[in-house]
Length: 249
Image (cartoon, rainbow, N blue to C red; front, side, top):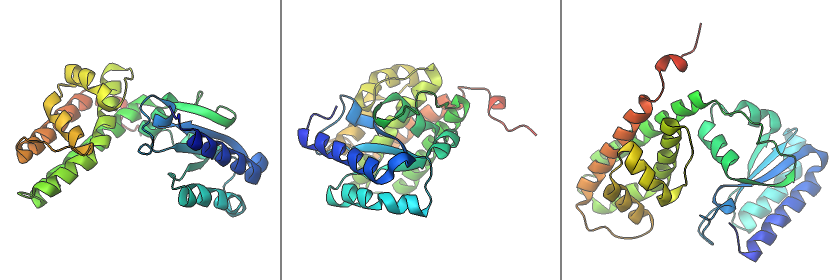
């Protein structure tokens, strides 16, 4: 969780300013992600905020633009996610991964709780997980072709993918087992047992993400990583009968 007093004061300042500028239009402000868990790393992790409004037309956006500019440009924080209550409710199907994560790791800072009763369709969650995994595999394969023999480029591609990969491993476990697990490296023991993930390969990718060098044959590690993700794709693909996700009519 956030333990830095200065960051906590900045978060409180954001909520106060947003409330003052929005008035009754502001439904809630929610802190989510690693800032609500023990995975938050001071000066490295993002402070993620969700702001929910009744309306977001031009007048309402103009009213809060200075607050967002102060937060994102002056304080160099990640810009808040800004949605109407209707958008939040209606987008849970297409943003199932994101919505599920926000629901599971959040702290209400202002207003009413709009997340606890939010329904995330898990059959569509499984579709999004498979989609994101397949996109990741395709991009990594394409980059391997373009960067063949270029160690630095391959290292950068692996490092960039690490965060997405661990998130998708966690959600693949939700698909296969029906329950959530911890994020980051903490997901690896369960992913190894249930999904058949090669621990040394994924650890090498996470080491690159953390700025460490790996001594193994990088192209071999890269290919093993693609194979690893492809195996997870197959597990997710088999998790539910296809008829449960097909459109009717």
